[in-house]
Length: 178
Image (cartoon, rainbow, N blue to C red):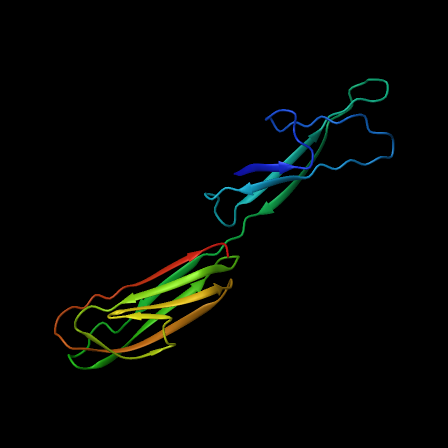
């Protein structure tokens, strides 16, 4: 849903009903209402706003209600991340991790942060592009904005120094406003 924020003419009560003085023939009146889309509304949701205008004629006869509607589609980013690696490697053998991220949404994603922590048993050889932030075993790429339909990959070359299963996960965080 939406939440009422303001209007150019204040409603007399909280029930979203406005009353106006008589309007001379040929005159026009405007009511502008500002609402905020609630945080729990999903991108792609269609919001329909309907207005009903009831009025009386100069002879004080009730006239047929006039109705008009407007639709607005909620837009928003939809970021996703996928990390790939070979299923098996020999100890000491170099291999690549690839982190793919993309925005399948209808709006820009802002302050995108992709984090990657490397467990003991992996040695980093190279990465492209260079991360924004590095600490021992942790790398982070920060992007100010990722547009709708954008898809990018990060490439990391490592080698294994220990036998056994190595679990390595990437994370992705973002905001949908600048």
